Length: 114
Image 1: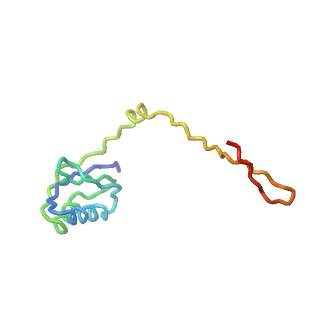
Image 2 (image 1 turned 180 degrees about the vertical axis):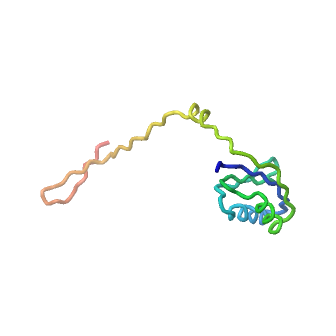
Image 3 (image 1 turned 180 degrees about the horizontal axis):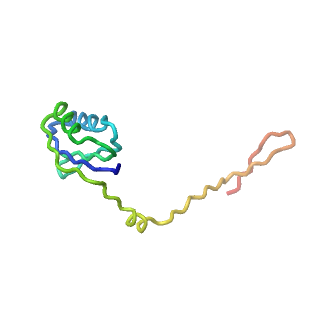
């Protein structure tokens, strides 16, 4: 089954209700991620495989309040654009400024060279 993206508009009056709405959205089987969308952050975008959109809206209506199903569709993947934008990264090199020398007794002493 292909990944799908569901966008739901939820009437959220407080931050408590918005957290509750995200918890409900994530609790459904098949959901991989859920995030706020829209200009007023009143929409929830849910992505995953095999998500029942009717079950999602019903649970949100029971738990939070008025819920409107806006769109259901496939996930748009941008693999070609991501490959062009990534630049090779150089791993930082960590240099230890302290050199350790061991004496004949097996105890280390430190020579500070700066």
